[in-house]
Image (cartoon, rainbow, N blue to C red; front, side):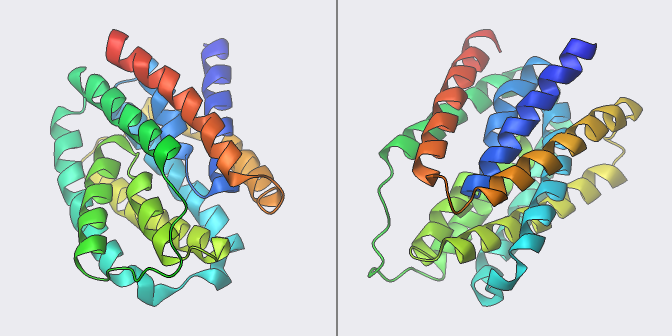
Length: 245
């Protein structure tokens, strides 16, 4: 039990550090390993609950950089997507097939991370169908697997190619508000258990420490290198989920 808690603590610590230094990655790292210990439903609820705290912590440190007008369309779509994610996770979250689906999705994210190119700062970003599509996708996947971040990362990188603080601040407030909705819906539906509290408290310490260190190093470390390291770790875990899930 102690060893299991220590492993979970380290997983969450690394994930929160990655998010603090790069803007996202907590859900990707955590959901790559937690399903080996819990069901997808239990893993997602733990990660989303901790992501709420983690995103709030980072958002408060970058609050002045939030650009609220740019959030309206994508955030509205994301909240609608979270409703669909809640329905699927609430009813089918105990099924092992979700671990395989999660593994396949994570592999896709890894491919995207390695193949993505820096956005063109001169290219005009679509403000209607693009944020709607990405918001719905990120909200749905985030509500089921807690890994909807890449959808929002893609949009905000296009929107703020030369302002990493606005990029990260808008990303964190999106994560925060969608996490609040997911936690509220599952809380009302009685999906949280007594055992959840112990794991949450362990995770709470890890995310507060990891995110704080990550934000402090935000201006010094290469985000690209951090993302590549995290991508390799995620790829290995995703392969295991597909094979042994």
